[in-house]
Image 1 (tube, rainbow, N blue to C red):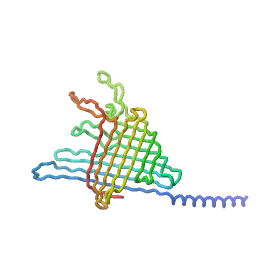
Image 2 (cartoon, one colour):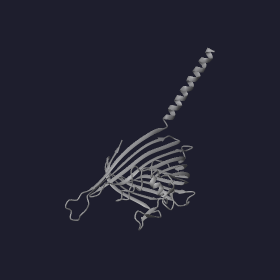
Image 3 (cartoon, rainbow, N blue to C red):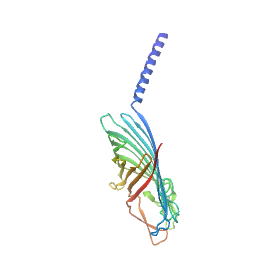
Image 4 (cartoon, rainbow, N blue to C red):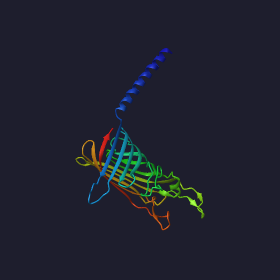
Length: 314
């Protein structure tokens, strides 16, 4: 019995050593990479006895991005968190918000061999804002808040890219989309596509507005990043989504393109364009009756930015 026990112990030690060697070899084939970047763009205009006239102003845009990515021969797992917040102050005006976005993205992909550039992928995306949004100069009635709206995408599909950090095409035939409107006033008003509250003829609420709108549809995204000229790079991101059940073929568009002009290691200039279209976000037009608005169709949303600032990697 003692000899058998010793033999089993020796075999166990050999097995554990073999497993340790195998794990060590596997560890050499994969790596975790974390990157952090923070940037601050500032623009300022001051007038003193300027005969052409003008208004003093200053604006700032803070951009913080953190990434944690896993990479080996068969699996890729990309995780990122980004915060963008901008403000503007003009003479004789109160401080106004110009940018407000919090976004979390996680994409995991698997390929069967090292020769193919096609991955079976799953993707999670969440986006919202931090502070109230207003239709300036009206500050009494917020048109958006934290988690009003909030957007979540969760789905699976396929992704193509030889170098996914620089170029990728992602297609998901089955993507779950949830739109959150967790503010009572905005949900009762039916903002961002949720079902509004129902009132009787005397103005008494029969049922509250919907807090969450759920959709199931097709998602296509494209990401591209490249160096155009020396010290000039471009980043392109496109997202297209259509719902199977509600107006199939009516596409929600989110397209952003940014040019970075690098002056040196810390100083850069940025020129960007951001276009959005969501058929569920209707426009409101004032009527002849005070504080009453009429709902119109959705419109293309466009934002353009130009700034010079500093960037720090940490």
